[in-house]
Structure formats: C-alpha cells, structure tokens
Image (cartoon, one colour):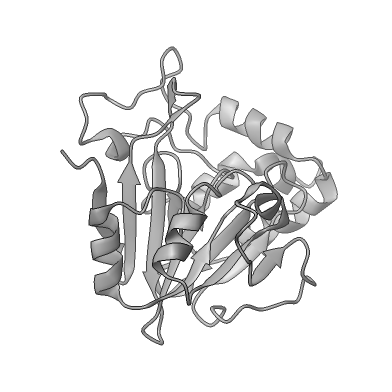
Length: 242
C-alpha cells in the first residue's frame, strides 16, 4: 500500500508526508513540500523519495522550476528529482552540496554565494539561511499562504500524519511529544546554535515574518499558532537578556 499522504494544506501548497525513522529506530517522519508559483512553475523542497504518487501530483501542478535542499542532511533525494526534472534549478546550502552526489551541478548555494544573491523565486518565497545553526538550515516563507517551511529548525513530534498509512502510531518511544513549546525542544534549539549572534539575527528575521502555519519536515504541520510555536522554540535567542 502506498504510504505517502498527499495534502493541499493551503491554496497552491502541497505536502508529501511519509514515514521515516532516524537510525532506523526513531520515528521522525519525512516530508517534501511543493508550491505552485505565481508564474505557473513549481518550487519543491525535496526531502522524500520521488515515488509514483508524489511525481504524479507534482506533474499535475506544473513544470518544476526549483529543486531545493533545506539543510546539510536533506540531500538524499536531490539526484532523483534532478533526473526527473533536468531543467529545474538545483539550490542547496553549501553543507548539503558537500555531502550530495558529486555528479550534481548546483545553480545556487547558500553559504557560498554572496548573501544578497537571489535565485528567481523571491517574489513568491522568501529564504533565510541560518549560518549559525549546526545543520546550516534555510527557513522559507510563502506570504500568500502565511506559511513557513523548514527542515530541522523545528520539530513537531509525534509524526502522526506521516505514519497515518502504517500500523505504527508514529510516537517516539519513551519520549512522547517533542514539540516546539517543550523544554526539550528549547534545549535542542540552544544546543544547535554554533554562532549566537548569527542565530539571534536569523531567528528574529523569521519571527518578523507574518506566518500562521509551519510545515516541518519532521512531525505534524503546525496550524494557526505557527508564529507562537517559533517564538516558544527559539525564545533563548529572542530574550533580550539571553
């Protein structure tokens, strides 16, 4: 049975959610996100396999113009996306490029290109590269749907939706929830920051975006209170005395 949950979470914003266990043990889920741009093209955060059901839906949306890697460790499926959509621009953080298939040619590299570089999707989607975060993540903002998309900056576990087509509950053994307002997530956010000044700058940039929804790669979509979830998870960097 197909295990991918395909859902239009907002107008022109589609998620592709499926099971994934870190180290083959911890269920954290996986998710790709596709956004239909105002020019008719498609922007894809490619974090899961391009299986038949995923490709069918993406092809229905329009021609893929951008294939995006969100951080150092979300690079495994870039090659199959690029093979399927050879004319799409491939853009990733430098840390992902270093780990990715060496045969791939990247059209843009966060952390290597000048900070003011634009890639063509900025009228629809804003990006903030977290140079001070251990995994070198990029956060994205789609103003039209008030949606923020990210990979490892914020988790919202358990990953109920991502395991909804399996016999598993998607819960992390002995942990329960690992959500943005939990003390454990706040400790995680603090520990992943390798450059405190850079983290304060970039956390505030995202906090200033007008979003209500967060689409994480790991865990359930945060609906309605996305901004508060971000403020809770990263308050260590927003606290003026922190």
